[in-house]
Image (cartoon, rainbow, N blue to C red):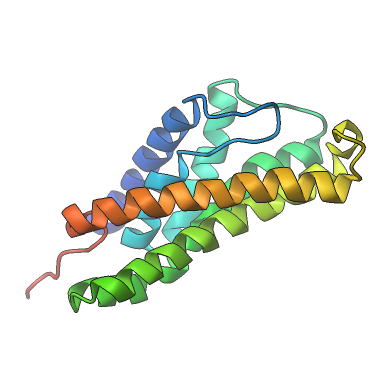
Length: 190
């Protein structure tokens, strides 16, 4: 394995560790609504390293939930969906790496801002889609206020995903405005 690839994977593991630490910051409102602060470093990493590296780091983030004992286990399929698949899908934010980096290099800050919003929405939607599915299948019986499982999961997971995307966007926008190198890779001169 080349040094560059090793650096990418190590960076991804460190980002996953930072994401799990930020996940422990209490942002829950009730038992079903939360803002996932771990999406902030994960999205920055995805913008820096891309889709494949983002999937890996997201998967590591999901696995770290087991290490810290932060897993609610109903069934094997529920755990696979909510911890391995959902967190890995946060790496979908990496699909926006090339356009964001190009826009930053061209110093098109308004366009970059829009792309960062789209990036946050993609990463959070991809992840919270799987939490929504798990909410319908596994958590629907606990739906509050007489809602059917689809409505309850959509409201709670949709709300959590949207709130997380907005917080992620705001923080990443501030980071990129003050320190664009957080997402830009250095051009290596031969």
